[in-house]
Length: 49
Image (cartoon, rainbow, N blue to C red; front, side, top):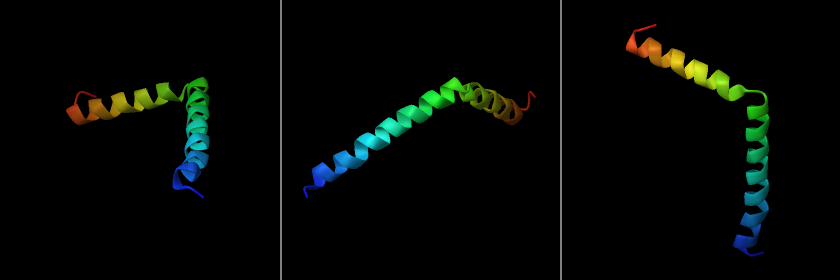
């Protein structure tokens, strides 16, 4: 089998799975949790919080 043909069988399903995972994460509002944790880490490093 051609190497480019095998890469297509792997590349496109992984791309679709990643898009589905992003959509599920946004539906569960996990991006807000990550943002909250990032703000807390930044405030602790600066020493304000």
